[in-house]
Structure formats: structure tokens, C-alpha cells
Length: 143
Image (cartoon, rainbow, N blue to C red):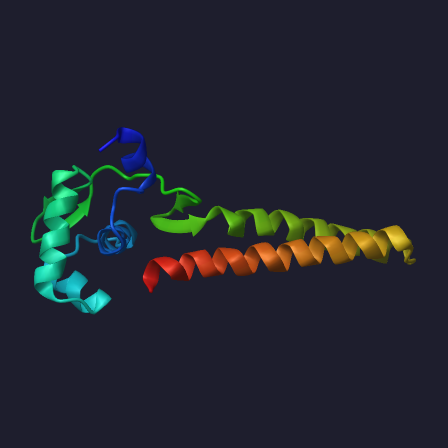
């Protein structure tokens, strides 16, 4: 297994990745039974994937549970306050700012023109599209 694939989470299977994210986003160490209950999986399946994550040196046992040892940046995501946030959600905020900025300029000038209407349409459409795709990516981890 190449190190670059592991760094992006490519080599982790779907269930292993799902368990990794559950452990990463937990503020307390999670036990095997807690993970199984939270993700609606058999305990034996969770145990198998926990051992796989331990072998990859991504998690470590702490007390009666597990915590992330080495966070890996998954492609298309950033980690903010122990949450996996799709980068598309961050990009959507840029376009929301552009949209609101244009609205403020229009309100200050008290007039519309073709350019301002076009800027509103483009920035709002970009915001909605990127936000929708970001939310879709976020829920993809939890399916």
C-alpha cells in the first residue's frame, strides 16, 4: 500500500472509513459496542475494522475505547473541530459572501443594472450548487 493512497483515505474501505470518521468526530474515546450501536453494525464487523485501523496506525486504544492517533486528510475534506467538512461547503461561503456583498452595494446605491443582476444570479447559483454538493458529500460518509 502506498503512503500517498493512505494519506487520502483511498485504501480504506467504505466501512473502515465510516468507523474512522465516527472515532475522529467523537470527543470521547469510543468502544466497539458504542460504534456498533451508533452506526447500526454488528459488533464483529466493527471489531474487524477497528483492528484494521490499528494496524494502519490510525487509531489507538484509550481506556475502554479508541481515539484517532494520526488524522488523515481525506480528499475533498478538511478537519475543523473534529468534524470532516467538505471543502465545497467552504467554497460555497465565498459565493455567499459575494452575493451578500453585491446586495449591500445595490442597497447602498439604490439602483439595479444588468451587471449587478448578473452578479447576483451567478453568485447565488454558485453558492446553492456548491452548498448542495457539499452537503451531499457530507451525508455520503454517513450512509
